[in-house]
Length: 541
Ligand code: NAD
Image (tube, rainbow, N blue to C red; front, top):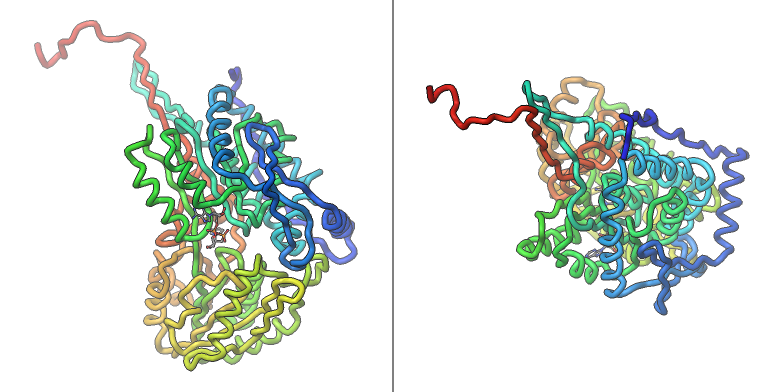
């Protein structure tokens, strides 16, 4: 065990590569992308450190070229879920006994591997499998993931350093034990960083994990496991399985040793799992920790004093980057009548220059949505708006799935503040705008607050400090991440801890100390140096 009170390297945000045209870094990334695109990858599950293959191989098609196959991943069944649980439990004792510096070193090494030799590979895998362009891949699978790993190490040491006071003759200590049993991480398709962070931050705090990534993120999930292995993560600490979500949840959540769920994905799935945990509550050894970051219907509200060019830019970036498939994407906007024409004209001008297409061409700002389901869902909203009496498509509306699942940046304008596309999470490049009378600012703030069950992110644009303050107060519970004169996307680890409340999640703020605290169970230790030898207190005379 440790014979030093070590300090970890000071965490700093990883600088974002620009990938400017002609730069060496863009050439290197696109070369790696092309090579991986032409190769055929075979992705196993990883259970107890062993690569596990099955007869059930699933083909991986890039969303921007759905007829192309880049490889396959091996799909498992309930026997693999069971094996993953057993492997995690078998690894538990040794992992728990390892000093925290050793755990820290593994994840700091993983961060450096991603920052260096694996940067192109993990970015290219994210580009291929999830259709992120060079910039979107870089800020997610390289920078955000590196930040999660480095900042979490620092937060871990802050937690361990938090110690109680001690009276004379006594030494009090807090020990932050991992949870008893195993943890379960279930991750979404849209962020490679999230999918790595959910299992790794639990493991960092001494837990063992069964991790079920999204099938749609299998390619970059495989690279994450390669990195963890090279960084020295012992076998069985994180076990990656590709299995049916609902069946896996039913099996894992019924296990007596299940200790914690770390989920990111849609609200309905999370609610289903919470219910299962409730149904199994009598079976568990401990009360499980439940952390879930879920859906959003993120807003932008502009005041009549807002800078119209800044509003338009925030809407274009906020709604269309990564095809609107960020949980934080701007998807409903409330613009006052007096500035709408200007905002709309500025948006039209910007959107006219946006190129849509494959991620292989870095000048494409918008790429493909994740799969056919998502494409059909987006198209459905656009088709219905085109036919609606209380909504119209005022910009974009084109959908083309001949090569990839391309949905063009679209603006729906509605006169009905409860129109379907302004209330429901679409998860595509579709923004719905409601134009309000300038005199209705206060009422519109109430509308923004009450329209959606979600409360993830939101922005206010105004040059008037009184108006900003009104919005700040009126929307106190409408967003877990609130932006003033900025787009509602792009939270940075260590700077804007991320998460929402209401139907958007438990708001345990991924990439913060708050989140890590959920994966430990504190033990208070009191040691008395000279114990009492007589039961009588002085008041007894
Ligand atoms: P999803 O809910 O479809 O899938 C998430 C994960 O759950 C996947 O691994 C999937 O296989 C699994 N799953 C699916 N059905 C399941 C079931 N019945 N039981 C157990 N597991 C099941 O979500 P997605 O499409 O991958 O991601 C998009 C969603 O994630 C959006 O709703 C988005 O808002 C949300 N999201 C939220 C945040 C946040 O921080 N709040 C971040 C990213 C994504």
